[in-house]
Length: 198
Ligand SMILES: [Zn+2]
Image 1 (spheres, rainbow, N blue to C red):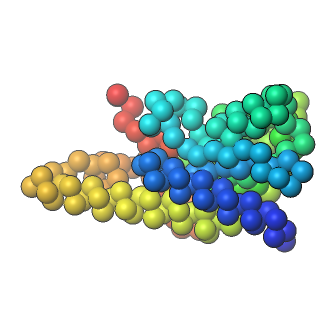
Image 2: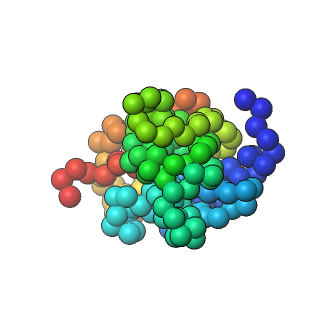
């Protein structure tokens, strides 16, 4: 794939959105929706702060774009997102008839564009979004890696301040084994990496 400079610029905007998520303490994933080479909506991941399991970057952007268009169908739009979409977001894109999807880093835990399942390639579904994988994947993954590294070091600092507790989430030796390694070797924790017993 030899991406156009326009597509690279749009993915950089999506990375900016991912940084917005990190700023409010959410796993940094960002999305941008484009029609006629104009940005019509953006979104970033924020399920924790909104108490909303559907508050992924893509859903946020799809809602904003559909609202702006006055139509839930976005058949002439492209969606750029920094991380491979999950099944929920692929489903929403199919309902919205998104024409093209560009994503950055692969997500081996919840990715539904080939990593775990490949919904966009399922011929029995009624709409087929064209998928362009791996656009600025190293940069997209780096945002995630920096976020989790900072969170781990913050957790270590606060553990030390409390006299050395060993709350496991995210620590090297602790209880979190829900991490995974992205294609380019980035270790990340995923969007659903919360205790199941809340
Ligand atoms: Zn999603």
